[in-house]
Image (cartoon, rainbow over all chains, first blue to last red; front, side, top):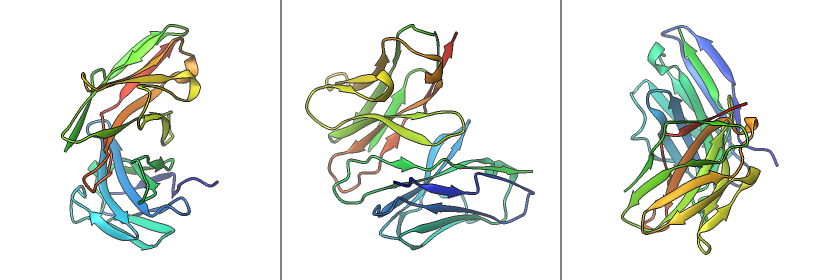
Length: 115
Length: 115
């Protein structure tokens, strides 16, 4: 079975540019999560969706960050404009909503460097 | 609400030695417990989980963990580590009830295996 697929794996951009990260969850999973990982803060939950609907975006750091899930098989995390402090690894994870024990399935991450 | 404390940020060990990575949690409700492993430049993957039953749980790659309810701990152990076990290890808990199953992660423990 295909796992969670993220793209791009690496992104280097300049401050002020727009960044779009993409995620395809595991087929049949109806919960999707975006995390950010840094050395300073560890793993932070940014936002999660149930059945394509954003449930909790309290972890989104600023209005520069936005996330969408237009259908069950695709989600984006956008940063506009990007800043050097946004440099991090961004992970997407998915799970089932019903009958779940809270186990998450992670993608391989998108490493973002903002110069 | 839940919280997870991983008591060691880094654990250096020699190859073939035993290792224990410590995890303590607090929660007002009963929880499921997890250990995830993150190899360099990869996403997190499930190592093992405790749902119910026997308090000793066996996972992949020879790892096991023991749930101790009275001490609210879920320590991870391996009797003999290999170089390839060098990775970041995350403990996580997820509430069994209360509507939200969203897991809470610890800050991670970096296991460094020396030859």
